[in-house]
Length: 347
Image 1 (cartoon, rainbow, N blue to C red):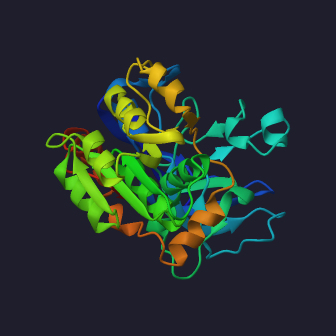
Image 2: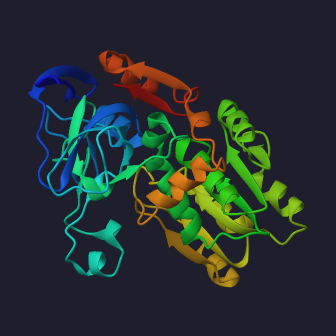
Image 3: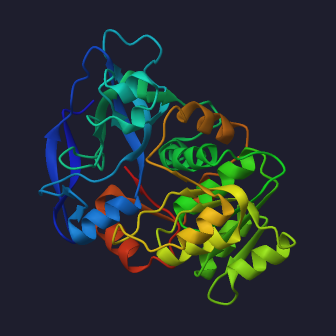
């Protein structure tokens, strides 16, 4: 195995480049993974376009990417449950293990989390990475490393479904047909939700939603989604709404189309961080708002769903680039949002 590896770095807003680093050596509880695929997430694009997300500010050179899949090529001496040659999906957040959130199982809320590609922690647009073995999940024979890379966004979708108490017999609506909207739709279907409708304004994304199993789609440029859903549910409203677009208008639509006494799950981040919502209607309907921050205890479930054919993860990939094409990949993803559902980097 070579001693040096290529690393793609963000050198400034809209500027990618390359550096060379030593291939890291795994600690006792870590494995060394040869990365094969890394997904490009909306947060990567946001850092690339603006240099920050809220209080997280990029200080170049910075490595993007937090959706990795690869193969184990080295083991720390304490690692017993993985072997060289195992395909793995890497859960990107390492938590402290001793705060109240970690101790109560809500480790995604750990204030000390070290998360790939969340400044100042570098991500994984690179050839190799060492990662805690307990956060590397072995993939079954019939699950590829490209699917392994996409377990990360799928975990968000399953967490949203669980937060919304999704169950068989329900009718659910997902607002937004981007990557997170589509994996949420597939997670809901995998959990037995009978009817899942997807709302967006981009026709290509709606076509992809139908291809991946949505019960129906609504182009909200052409039709009022509230009217359509109320008609489909005989005026009662849907049993569960999931907002993944991060827009005020779609959040308001969720409130209007939700059946009384049901859950509204908020996944998407708004650009401003603030919204004005019809709270009188929320109170009249006794709606429950549930929110999503990443995920917890989801990777095994998500991997099993893919292995059993309940989720078509490969189906969300619309564009593939090599690591050498990272500048092109980022620029194309920024400039063609209506055409791309999910772009991925082949390392």
